[in-house]
Image (cartoon, rainbow, N blue to C red; front, side, top):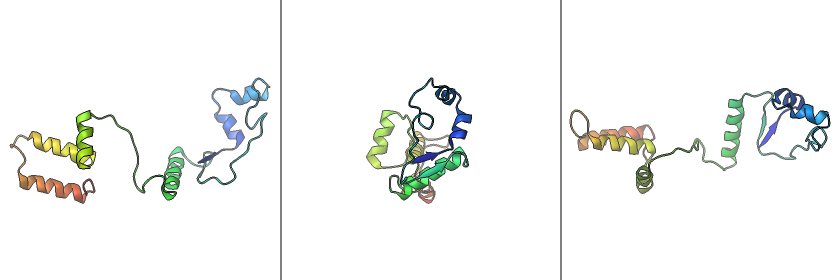
Amino acid sequence: VHVSCPIEVCEQRDVKGLYKKARRGEIQGFTGVSDPYEPPLAPEVVVRTDRESKEECVARIMEGVEELGYLPRGQVRCEVIVPADLVDELGANGSSLLAVLASREARRGRAGGPVTAEEWEKIEQRLRALGYLQ
């Protein structure tokens, strides 16, 4: 991923004042000031942070890594902290987090009593229709 931005914009965004220090000679070997800037020759994904919003840049990066096969299409990876027993349950049956949580709630019962087999079948059908179960 090549994050492209003109040096003038980088200097405007520089909250630490590093470019000013580099231009005064206080920082040696500063890329683009006292050291040459060498853009990549053939980047696989390019984002222009001076022309695109953060959201557009993220979307372009996600599209690029999906097209290149680094991530499955349409899936976003995120990390969450979950109890160990829930991790075990997720791994054991290959269900989605939402399906496992729905199952736990159903097993706990509700005001009208435990969920019947027929009700559970309807819940599973709905989760499949929504794409949460395969």
